[in-house]
Amino acid sequence: MRIFAAYVEFDPETNLYVGIVPGIPGAHTQGATLDELQKNLKEVLELCLEEYKGPTEDLPRFVGLQQIEVVG
Image (cartoon, rainbow, N blue to C red; front, side, top):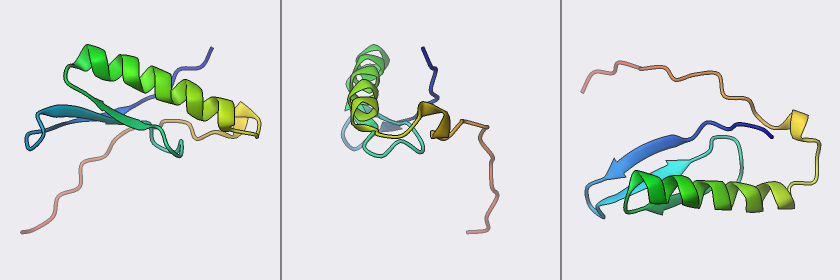
């Protein structure tokens, strides 16, 4: 079993939560609730990993988030 980190946002335009697993191509989805989003992310991540042909050790590893201040 591996644990992946997901980046989660709320989109006020669609009223949906959007989740992305950084570094895993195709691992993104949405849900009306955080519970639904988690279920959908697990499902899409499992599908993406089935398609992945390399060793799982080569997959990106979540390190953290940084806040960047910009003017404007």
